[in-house]
Amino acid sequence: MKPTASDVDRLMRDDTFKAIIEQVKNDQINIFINSARHGTQEREDAHAMFQAVVKIEQALKSVITEEAIKQKREEGRSK
Image (cartoon, rainbow, N blue to C red; front, side, top):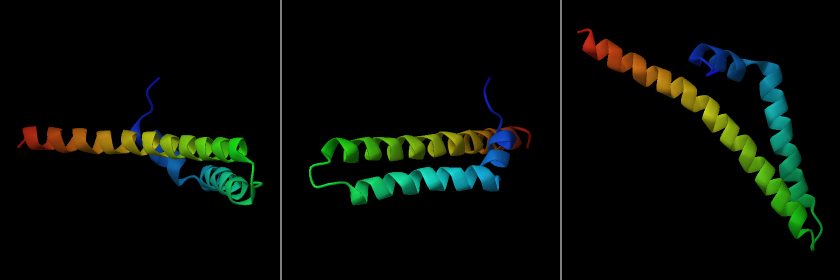
């Protein structure tokens, strides 16, 4: 099932979703900042998790962007 732009937009504007995403990102930043001097693996894991969340956000935003581009093209063809 491919999500629609309206579904993604509604999700991205949902306060609970936004709070959870920010909390996960902040948790990973805190792990990274507060890791022990020799906590290389811990830092790498936190960085990977943070990057994964960012990629999820980017994927969601791309659904909205793709739909907007599609609509602009269709509007241009109908003129």
